Image (cartoon, rainbow, N blue to C red; front, side):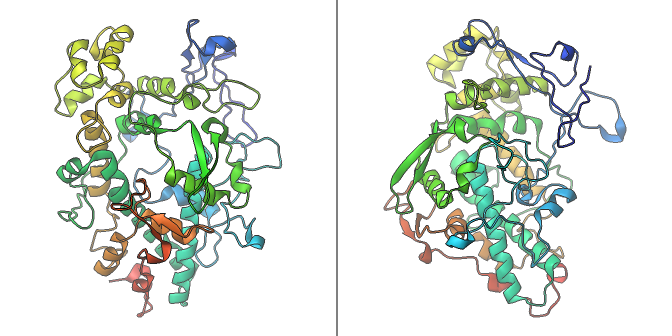
Length: 497
């Protein structure tokens, strides 16, 4: 029986697959049964975890076939998480004045920058609200409130959009709202691509994998090639398992540091999941930003903090939440992912034929533990296997994970017609503009859009080091030269040659 009751937002109400017997045959339900021997959940008498299946997509020409999940957001690195993946969301985020995005000017009277707009259209979606007069934030991706860290990053990109839009309006006073908005969105999408491929991916994959898969952007690259027949969709294995490797890196607490680089305080991660309300406190955006810049990430391994394995999305009245690691494996099974061994073979690696062979790719303790859980190596779940591998030299991840991540980011780069280095389109950047975008770093975004941060290390995803990653004044960092976007001919972005 499918529960067709709607919630207050007009969306289908999610069924209680654990406690409502009427949902026994509901095709949306795929709950996790918790054994009586569970060391944590048994303390609270919990025997079931409510897991709702992913929405299925329609096959081409409405043909019958196996159930496939639908991706509700675009797979392209086009900054759609800022603007939305559908026209309705995009319209909701825009102010339609000067190319600007909507904001919440709660701190203007004390000289601080605006926050994201409040989520008024679906206030309870992905948000744990302590009262009806408190709202979470709105952005192009409805997961913006999933944790405070995401809301912080979204805030900076919203501010960067508006900063660039204001400057472009000064450079080109003849441009209308639509032209400024579209040109600024193109720039923000390019900046996201630049930072992802120049700062994030090299740390995850390492120099050797980046070079081998032609993922290097800018200096040292072999040039960009666009393949019009390449499918740049997000693969099931990437979204359901491989790119969830970051769950291993999550810390137990999120720290706040002063703008001068001194530790202030920390809060449990579970207290900030779907509860980003600290951002309503003046100065806290800067403090959490400095904490993220200076706090150590956890090691990339088979351990995941209890903040998300025992307390994920924990309601204030409870002492337990959900288990993210269990959900990851349940989701992989729901989506029909092949096994860890199957993807080793896909990546050109030898299959593991017995558990003893795991000692060559994982730590001995981890390898021996698998034999207590699975009957054969072919049964191993993909997510569990890839996060347990020993990392490659110079990389954060092991060989199977490096293969799956590199392949996804290769097709995202080569299969994107609007990749910022592509030439020959009406919206293409000039070579000079591309060179300017190649200079942008995440530190530029933070320096230009914080309230009072004046010094940062050059590469923010790496801890500061006096020799290789020094802390420098924001004034010394090269900024995106927007004068290159001066429209002397008055033709506008869509007519640029």
